[in-house]
Length: 444
Image (cartoon, rainbow, N blue to C red; front, side, top):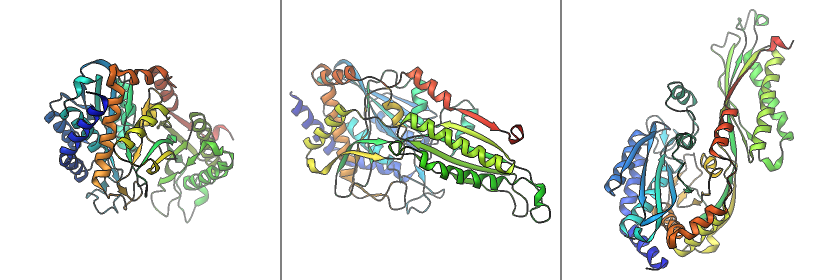
């Protein structure tokens, strides 16, 4: 068979089984779970893959699972990833009792990944491909519940708060040559977007330590940690004109604990924030300035401050060859070229950015949904568009990469220069992961 015949057989197989794809996506949607708690979702994915005849490794990073599809001969390893976790958005109509819901579209990713796998397997074309396809259902993309994840780390169950970071450390990407996934997004009248760029970030947990006193009768005897936090937030605002426009810096702190009781001077105030930027240098520069602002707020009132920096995610890097290939396959399945957006500027963050520093990757955005991500308005508006189009396009892209003795895949791999080795990546993560305790009395 020629490559067009292979693609047509895969497209037909996916269409023939589209109800299975819708069903598994809906099943994940109806039982949402937060990061590193996706045990039920892992079982759903593992059962689906088992029914396709694949050997499944479960709970690869607390949760998550892995399976591999073998081609006819040896060649590159192409990984399709999808994320298992949901978010908290209690105002969403489908939120669970705990306010958890897939307003992130990760259930759609799962359906798309499994749909691509189903198409490749059911079409009977694998003998024509040189290489293998690794399916990774990954945990904990959303950077939430930091206390819970810190406890997992203390228990030795994880090192990193992000699921793909953890899988990198554990070696699950060591034999992967190219990685791909997609994200859902409301694109209005357009259908897909290729080549998004995103910010990376450093996570921050901050504790201002003051001294309690009666707020009415003797406030002068206290050290107001809340005032230190408020001053620190204003100091951060004052830094904004020092951030380079090209770095697209975003700093958005929240106070998670403002005191204990209203008639005591607050002696323990806690804050969380991300420090986001488009480049690693921008992340480090803005993080230094934020730390400086936090310390200045503490010093102004005589408080101390404990700053915990947590490795967040790296910016997504584009691979133009893969972006162009994915776009060509969108057109192959009938998407008008004028409905495909080239490039996108996202100041949010994805842990897939970490993978993009190690190997060639692709991370398109696909429509079929309405409403902004992480809001009550987010919902699927077109199941076929949301699930089936990315499933088809990823499967066809894999055929391109592994057909003809994987000549195209090997060419992309040979032309790629990683921004970091795995060791350099882990060393960088370790350099970010630190606690800085600033005691004002040492400086006055």
